[in-house]
Structure formats: structure tokens, C-alpha cells
Image 1 (cartoon, rainbow, N blue to C red):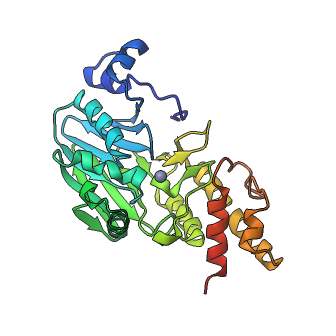
Image 2: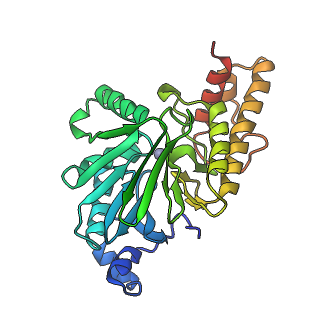
Length: 303
Ligand SMILES: [Zn+2]
């Protein structure tokens, strides 16, 4: 099942809990004025979109888990929607990585969550960024970190977090809801949109390509992947085919930049060339090509 980016059913969360057909859209607008959208994907696992990276949620009678938290206000809106379905505490909150649009909403869960989990480098990155920005008081840091793999039962689900290698940062985890077979990739996937490549937080374009390949080998063909971000008109969920396309984007980027470096181009030459896409990966478009050019150039000229 695929979710068009702007097409989440606003009423699905409530309908799920109440066991009713979806409410008329005018009712949903009255109940949920904040603009977030909730969509059930498989079993009791779904996605929430508002402002920031896509959130995944699990709501069942025996447990509640949330993956990523956007910003405090959006996290508050999501918590309100979860409350429409259950008054349970939140058993588990995970972060796919430390960026603010995925973890600054953690603070909204402070009094109601039992465990917060992320990769060990994600926690360090979150601390470093907060210290630098002077926002430490606004953070809820992970209380549990892992190096390679971490797993826990939540209700009827088994939630497994896996770290592959450096990629978009040095702390990106894939969060797999095993029974539903839904895997949240966080910002390892920017679907047809120029990615953020956080060199300061240990990103590696070359390793990112390998990570996507390893992910394709680790999960089966039925796995439904959730993406952190998507370009306008593209979906926030998809399959291994989309991961392959992202691998192609990153490979094309490295090949292109390598050729340009060999031709004597400077980074400024490339940034001022008015490029709108990378040859061989034209589906990736929109704003922010500079981040790709800069990161690949830096990576290929380091040492
Ligand atoms: Zn993001």
C-alpha cells in the first residue's frame, strides 16, 4: 500500500480506535485542526505526517510505540490522536537519528513514555547539537542506546532497531515492526528529493550506497518501507525498488563529482553552475542540490 504525500486520511486514526467507518471529513477537521495526518499501513502500524520527518506508530491493546517525534507541537498533536484510541502510557519511543525534525518532539513524551531508544551515535549527536544551540533543557535524550541491533516486544509486535553503517549521519537506525513487516528508514531514504548529507555528523556517501544495498538484502520483498522525506508528489512509503533508485542517485552523484574534480572544477564552480539535477538520476530534483554537491566534493577530496 502506498501513501500519496498529501493524501493521508485525517479520520483513519479515530476510525481505527472506535471500530467505525471513517468519519466525514468535516468532522475530522473539527476534531483535528492541527494539520497532521494519520494513516494506518499494516496490522496496527501506521504513519503520521505533519511538519518534519515521517513518524511511524504502533497502537494496539497491549502496547504503544512511536518512531521519531518531529517538533514538540507536532508531537503533542500526535499524542492527542493516540489518546483518542488508548489511554495507555507510551511503551517505547525510538529515534531513527538525531536531527531536530525527528527528535526535538521527544520532549512532548517526557511524562508519558517508558523507554526512549536510539543508536549510540545518535544520542551523542543529539547532545552535541543541543549543547551548541543551548537547547539542552528542551531535550529528551534516549535512555537506551545500542551499537548494532536492539529488539523488544511491544504488545503483539516485535520492534527491532538495526544499525548498518555511516550513511546520512553516523547514527541512522532502521526500525522494523517485524509482524507487520513495516520498516522505518528515517532519512536513509529521501524519495526523489535531494537528501540532507550531514558530514559534520559523520555522513558518508560511499557507505550510504552500501547501507542501502545491505538493507535490500536484510529485509524481504514484502517489507513496506517508510521514508523520512519525499519530493512533492512522491510517496512516503515504498519498496526495495525505491531504495535501488536512491542507491543510483548517490552513485551517480559520486561518479559525476569525481569526473568534475578530474576536469579541474572547484566546489565553487559546481555550486555556481546552476545545476538542477545529477546526470543519470534526474528523478531527484527540487531544492537543495548544493548539499549533495558539497558533501560528495568534500568526501572525494578529503585526506
Ligand atoms: Zn529529516
